[in-house]
Length: 316
Image (cartoon, rainbow, N blue to C red; front, side):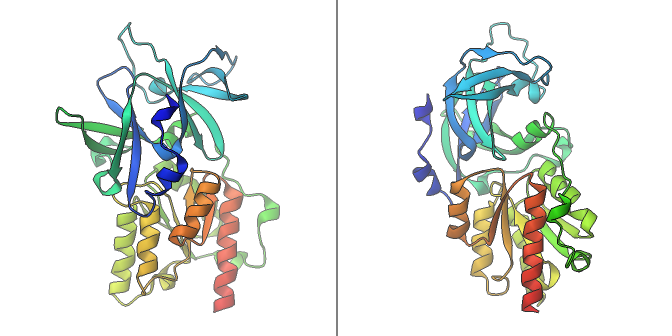
């Protein structure tokens, strides 16, 4: 089943083209759900599992995958899908990597992989409220017409299971510039409300002001509106943190558009994503980001801000 997945080399060709691949699957209902293939290590048939006494109720147990013990999360129950079909038995596992951790998600039927564009990916309706687990929606032609596909916010799923610590280690704080950080403004761009809140909770205690946008297009529109008024974005904000995966325009394309515009090409851009490892280090160089920081790493966040503050002071 892992042959469904493209190689990393093939997938990296999508970067900068505002394209993505989605793995489609079912959770025992008529709905079709999806995850970005970038996050997926492999898809396997569910192996035997060991129970974890005292574990969160969404964790079914622990499985062994390639010699490593991995927690197995019931994805259906995690997003409040209550299946009443007695014949439904989730039998497949999506092995994913988020925020430098590996976990398996127990799912039902695997459908296929589709290649699409981020501009065809739309945010969930505003009327959906804040309690849903969707990061985006799109429509895919299944051969019998268009089908609605719901792209899951796995960061929210994991945040409901794992308590993320947003405190910064005291020895990380550079007291020589602490007073300079107060009243600085940073733009954060992320479609996940959970991720935006984590950055705010980490940086706000330092007196840093936060501007939020939910996708690359919204952020680029904001930056261009400043530039159109004759205001350089670097005069408004110290730096920008951007996610990689976002509806309408991803973080890679956003960065590439910034670098092409002489009015804003010198903006300090930090890629802040749950996609881990050497892949993103390579993509940072490819699209022109200044830095890469894994999500939910408070110490790394404040270190990136302090590094940028030192740079700004040296350029003043």
